[in-house]
Length: 165
Image (cartoon, rainbow, N blue to C red; front, side, top):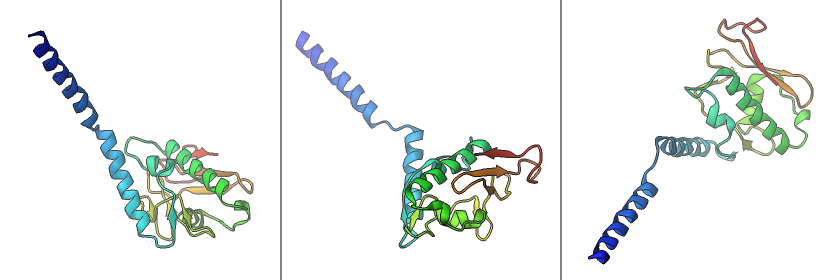
């Protein structure tokens, strides 16, 4: 009788452990869906090697995020780009559209950090902040860039601007 109870308890314990391994959380599902979306977007750009998930793809424009975190994610991706691209400071990237295209793979190495399509990227305008205003890229030196959102009023260089270096 004790053997039967022990076997039943082991079966129940095994079932509990197995169900815990099979269960996926909504966050895991979201990560899988986002990874699939990134892969699809990367496939659209022939000849460009998309480097995969990064701070930009995880954070920029996320519903529960904020403008400062978006700009920090953008900064982190540009720093990563600068570390991989030789002589980054010598490329002529005067503003938002040019920098975004560079990060989308229009560079000598055909490496992309930002997907070809993103809801906050508009052709010939570049990257927008959450308020729909273009992000201002201010080059402070060859490698240091300030990323600036115009804030709620939509005008750059006012008190509600958000800037990240």
